[in-house]
Image (cartoon, rainbow, N blue to C red; front, side, top):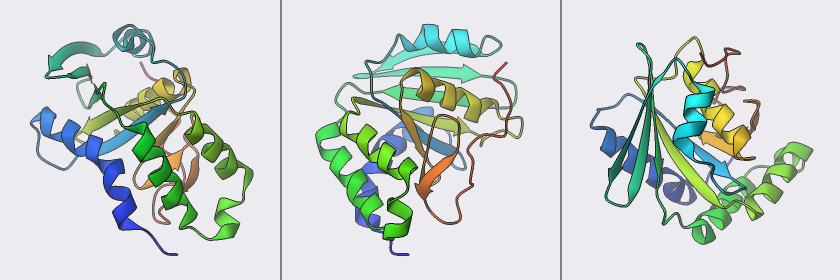
Length: 183
């Protein structure tokens, strides 16, 4: 399977910026939530999805950061008003086209490609230290994606709102979710 690494660079741009803002060194996990609808007020949404998490909001330059903290894992979401979907969407589709036809012709990939056409925004997230085994971080990210009628890019793969891998790196997990609910 061929991969187009140059195409992936824009996918990771928002992740790298978000990682730098956390002030924490690697390792950590990154995920982008792509939205096909207008973003809901994120702080209220996070509070409703993760009531046991401590939720903080801060502004750095033109970015708004929302942090959800549990004792064992933290998820930081970053929203930047200048997300360049007109550039990023075609590059994501180009990357997907680098996969064999039998991978890209399945209904889930075709649905993803249609969603990309109407994607309106991207929320970057950094999970520190890594996705927790209880699944709080992945469940939170997937719940946000569901509310945004979107999809997730993480671990060099695209995932649907249920956490099922749609397409991506062969060694990426088949699911982004361990089945836990967000407390």
